[in-house]
Length: 270
Image (cartoon, helix red, strand yellow):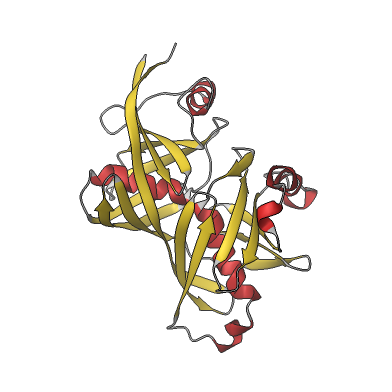
């Protein structure tokens, strides 16, 4: 079977996209794992299938690099919106495993689209240990604050926390965060399903921004109508997260950043 595909990346978080709106492909876990393999396949952190979904512009199904269907992927969602927009600006509504999402393509620079994605509300943030937080931003995330994050062995440390008994049986994604002097967050993420560090993670930086707010003394001065903005630096590029906050509840959460077309092609599946 020949399969036509598209490759997109958002801040270095890269994805294979399959268009299933005309004909939905039936891909096995083994085949998806093969397509995402960086040595034997196309190479990606995950694979997405765009399909028809009642009442919205399209539906999103996301699969981790291990071939298993995953939870919400923020950068993946932004890349899928950029693909669906077909180089036009506009607003979209799509369905994903965690519900419906609004998104806007705000403009283009060559093959790169600027996409703002609406994320789910977050109603619970748990404090973990002396300087950590655990929350679900469409995918579960442990956020750990520290220093010298650039020097950390993220694959080793991330694997330890990803499989920690406190987060089993499903495990968790893990974010190591350093707050820079200008307030920018430097975030490195270990993603379950990829089982390695990725260059960026959309739900991860969203979790990091909310955790940074919880950690800040400024939260006691918050007014519900205020928006809080966080600039994020990842290994793959820059992202922005904003939200409104009231106590430990967060709404109108938005993830903004680049979504870039890389290439398209055909691959033979045996």
